[in-house]
Image 1 (cartoon, helix red, strand yellow):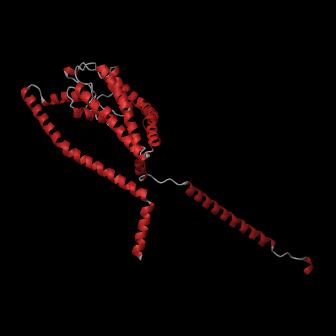
Image 2 (cartoon, rainbow, N blue to C red; image 1 turned 60 degrees about the vertical axis):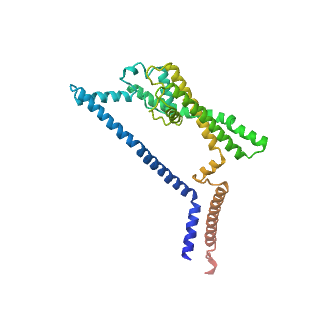
Image 3 (cartoon, one colour; image 1 turned 180 degrees about the horizontal axis):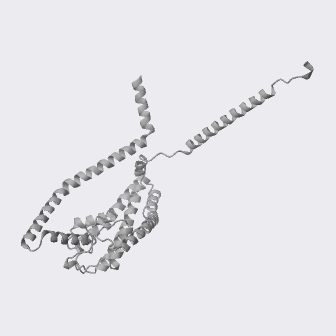
Length: 330
């Protein structure tokens, strides 16, 4: 008997807090996914890092043997200064000295990466004034960009998703959910083709040291606003039409980000994904529940008021019923 009562109470507890249990499972799943990514990246990349370290040590040792007049301390200072400059996008190589990082087109490209929060990191402000302006520019510009993207995506969604789905649903009488799924799939395939596959082929042709996989990797890292900065187009030595190339990349990033948001919003409007999201959300109070709470509070207040009134009336009656002394009785 006690076991059945305990099991029933546990079942009721789980059912009453179902969204909370789903949310806890979501957190655990996300943590496991993070750990899984760390394990895979570590197992895949650590051997390459170790190999590169050994090669650099061998090259450094060979260089010191061939140049005995140069001490290891002086070489370390030189390399540190060169690497610090490289972190700011300044290279000491002769074939890279012609490329400026802060001409107008490069600055336009940098501003677009800041506002879109892509932030490749290959170029960073050098001066204190530039760093301070970058903070102020970002504080104003990032919310402005979010507002701009939200307005643009909302208008595009009307013509790219809502009207076509409604038209096909009413014109041919097909299931609206089925039409929405097919439409979202076709839109996603079109976006992948126009903003990933075709640009990857173009970048692999324009960039000398990029293959198709590296170009596709750049497109994905950029349009997902990850922006690792290991691949940045237009930075090769003696790049032809570099200014025009940088402007074209800036336009591609802005348009690609808008298209990615349209595709994501289209998938988010699918009924199946809406139901999936609701599993992890807190349940809102229904109007009937709020009305019941208000009625309960009103009844409680009325009861208290009635009880208080009755008590006051009883006290008044008691006070009035006190016998009075008659002077004739004496």
